[in-house]
Length: 115
Image (cartoon, rainbow, N blue to C red):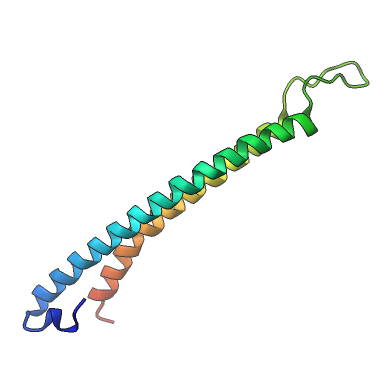
């Protein structure tokens, strides 16, 4: 970006141009964040599936019979792990969306601040 891009413009024209530039940068940030999340969550999903199988086999063992004669009918540990992972992934997605939306709004508000 050239330093004199805003020379010769009125304050209103410069403000409009700056906001347009901020929107373009913000869209690029949003696109990059979406690409990052897709890639990250793809690998995280693969890990969660593999680790859930490990938990099922090593910890829950729903096919075994306890000493009391009752069998464990539900893999609680695996289920808790998957719910925790899904909650964490949803929180990360929501946080990233909020951060990329408010980033532009905060910058634009600071540019207009009279303080």
